[in-house]
Image (cartoon, rainbow, N blue to C red; front, side, top):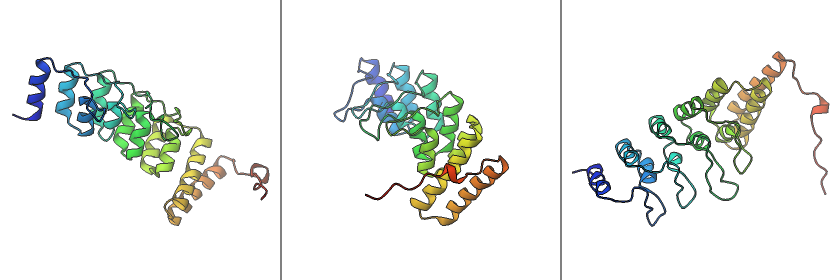
Length: 207
């Protein structure tokens, strides 16, 4: 008898499907973190709350973002793609899309956007999906976001410029940084959006 069979017996005899552990996690949180589709399906069948927050302020959905099929399973049960976590401080306020981007997996990101995830929602640090992908250095995820969201030329240019800064500063990868900056310059030339001296702010005075 496997764990899912045991869960089925316990739930069928009145076990609370939404009970929290000492670590303040529900069964559905644990099943999503373990990426167990069978357990998730069973818990949903028994009425598990897909919007229940853990003790740290995360929904089960935020633990399932490594796999697109699990994301779709939760969405089909009514899970919100735009609900924010309740984690305090500047590292909180993330949506499921933010979480998926942080994992760097393009398939869940693509699914979430096609399921109406809002890529303009900002977290507590003021970062939307574009910023999150840039700071993560996820070029392939950025390609997905650009393809599906159809951002303005200005936003595309700024994305390449910021990504170049990320590769230069965070990863010390000068080749990739220069590649992103060249792309940004080419786009500015093609669309007659080159910067002038009036667009560049002088450095702050040293006090």
